[in-house]
Length: 348
Image (cartoon, rainbow, N blue to C red; front, side, top):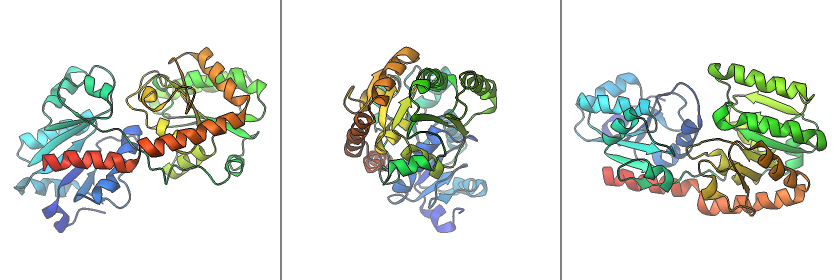
C-alpha cells in the first residue's frame, strides 16, 4: 500500500531496501520492521516489503524534500547508504542510520559511507569492532511465534515426501561462502550409513552460482543420493518456516558470515544445531549444550559432530529443546525492536 498524505506529513522512519534479490539482510529487516511500525510512523522503500507496513513510492519520496522535520533513513547495505547520502546532500531532511552485521574489514567505499551516517548500529560487539566509530550494539532477534516447534515433527517431516524419518537441513543462498559444498560432502559421507535420514538445502541459486549448484548436483548423483538430498531453490517465507519445522538437525556451514540469522531461526524451531565458528555462532551456541561448534570449511569435523546426533535422535531432540529455550530468553524480536527504537528516539 502506498504512502498516504497523512503518513507523509507525520513520517518518522524510512526503511530502505534497495536490493533486487531477497536475502538474509532483507529477511531480518522484514521481521523487525512491523514491530517498529507500531512505535513510529514508518514506510518501506524498495521491494519485498512486509505486510502491514506502508510502501513509499518514488513520487512520494520526491515530495518529502519540501518537509522541514527530519526523517530517519535506515540503511542496511551500501546501496541504501549511497541513496541516503545523495538525497541528504540534495536537500532531503534525512537523518542517516546504518545497521552493520559484517565481521570483517570494510572496503574504502563502505568506510566512507559509514563515516557519513548520523548513527550506526552493530549486530554484535565483533561487528562493532570493525566500524572505526562508535556504534550501538543491538543483536538480531527472531519471532518465536512464527519460528516455533511443530506440534508433530514426524508429521511435519512426512509432508516433505522425502524417505526416512528424520531431516538435516542447511539454509541460505547456495554458494561457497555459505559452505553449501561442505554440507553436501558431509551428507554424501553420512547418509549411506543412516537410512532414516534425508537432507534438504533451502535457498536461492543466483545466476552467478548455477555452475556451483550444478557441481553439487553431480556430487549428489555420483553417490546415488538424488532421492534423499533435495535442493529446493528460493521459496516463499511461509514455506521456509515449514521446512524449518521438519528438521531434526540444522547445519550452519558458513565459511564467513555477518550475523547468520538462520542460526537463531533453527534454534527457535527446536532443531539441534551444528554450527561453524562464523558469524554469531560463538555468541549463541554453548558448545555441547544447545549446539555444537566446528571449524569453518572442515568437512571431517562436521561429519563427526553430525554423526553423534544422527546416532541418537533423542539426544538431538533434547539439544533442540535447550536451543529453543535459549533463543526465546536471549534473542527475542521484541528485544531487538526495543534496542533499535531507542536509537531512533535519540536521533529524532
